[in-house]
Amino acid sequence: MQASRLADLCAPGCVWVRHLTVLVDGKKYELSATMARTDLLRVGDYKARIFKDEKDRPYEYQRTYEFLISDGGIRRYVVVGETE
Image (cartoon, rainbow, N blue to C red; front, top):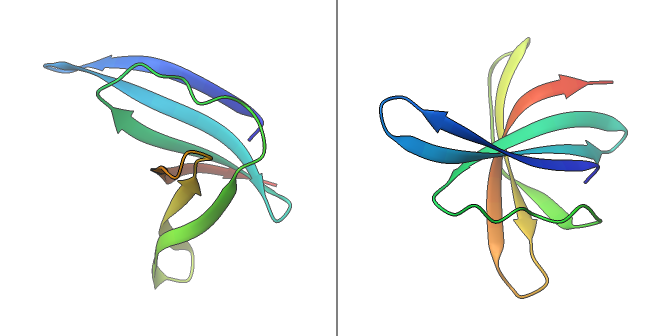
């Protein structure tokens, strides 16, 4: 993971959105997840795997990555951006 940040989203109630910038197989992705807590995930190397991958059309996809945390926990993040 190259970057980690929190942003608050208030519409109509407030929640925290965690944004990550990650590098997977040479592609840079922006991932996002809504969280009730304000914990920031530390930048570093994490084991990750694709949790959900839907490709209805050849030019679009929906993907969710699952990050394995050192204490045995799992965090899921949706791909919201992609660059090369």
